[in-house]
Image 1 (cartoon, one colour):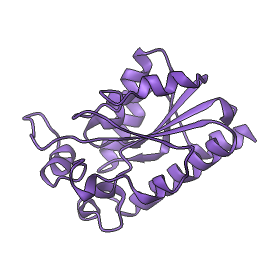
Image 2 (image 1 turned 60 degrees about the horizontal axis):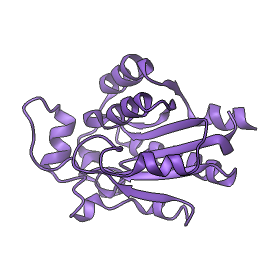
Image 3 (image 1 turned 30 degrees about the vertical axis):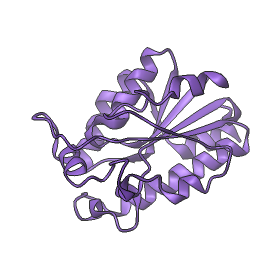
Length: 197
């Protein structure tokens, strides 16, 4: 896949989850995965933009009303305001904003879906590309909801397995191994960068 034909959408790379002082580091099964995922995301975003592709970040705000069917991860994010747009934890992580002026930053409406209320579809339509590549937060079904909408809108969707964050191994395996392959090609940032060389 040519990276210049790629639209890279990063979802929820915010201080409350990816920050060095994020309380999530005390709850997640593999705290080191936060830094690994963050690094993969920024490396891939830089590669895409260097080749003339599009990079977009969409901030998520789950709100603070925890529903009865919310999983432990989503409940933790909501109860602690780790994505709340009106709190410092909801701010976009500096590694994303430091990617430069070519990056577009959007804010979604309350909920899990990056397309909802963010103008993401309009932004992607401005510079049509063959492929949309997604990365970010699996917790609470955030990336899954975004993936399903992208698929329904007719995009050729790829999800970067090495650039997705989950509470633990079981959640990761469920989403990347079972759920998301129904709507997307699950791959890695390394293989897409290597394939573009």
